[in-house]
Image 1 (cartoon, rainbow, N blue to C red):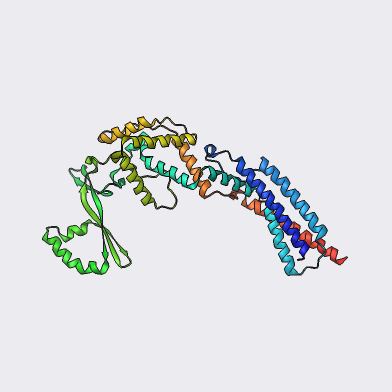
Image 2: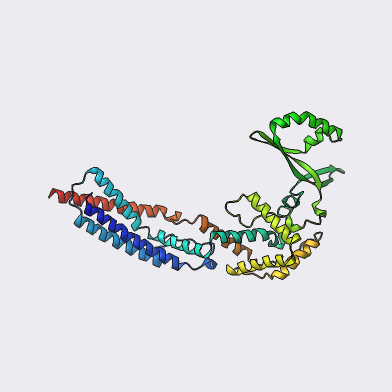
Length: 390
């Protein structure tokens, strides 16, 4: 490959880079804002009928046309070996790819503007706020769901979390008395060798305090062998969440609105539960109102229809905290739940699975790239061969 051909290829890549930069800036300034994102929002997938697609079609066509004209006119009289022709073919393949991928740069521009308006750190802050407040924001019919709201979901304070044991006693032919008991979950961890040494001594101690070995063994939930240690998880003390003044229905739900990346789900749930507990039981009433004000600001930021009044919602939370024996019929937390969920699921996809080259057009895109390259390369070889033989 001679010097002039190399310089021609370099100039071609410079021109392509400038066009890509133009499409990137176009995408950056075309972004309509995070408030206008909805469930079907995607960065771009070449829609064939809009300004990006139409301009892309003409610019790609004109560039390749002039590129091929100058290539054949000024660089097609060389006697290249097979290895050199292969290198030229590789460069032409890159030229073909970059000539048809301006819309990908447009997508990068949209993504860059999105993240300039909403950083990942800010996005995670908003998800954390929604995760902490999530049990306060359920539809009122959800509070009767034993799957969502039950004592097993309580993660804080001690002795929670707990496990449920259901005992049923036959009273008559078809009537059973069902009793639900809750026990704290305790953990004992020690070296396996030490555990084996003290096993016999432990048995004697349990017998001496009138706590039989069999009863202790019956309380073991499971054993985990971790390298040279043994972890024993067993039922501890019995607790009564329904009569616990430090527990209310809002602590009986540990579901997340949307997980934050980089932290385990269990750790997130526990941290959110601690924050929620402190909002209800430790902090002043103003802290609860302040968090609902942040929520109201967030909903308005994303143009979510809302009827939440922070002070009223905080009053309802306090009321049902102090009257946990009453059935929660309704609290004043009305907003468009579906729209908020769809908005954040879309943002999650745009942040972490943006699909710059949308799956629906992958085969079309690469077919066009390879087709254009094959036609151009074969045409170059044919013209070069004819001119050499003259």
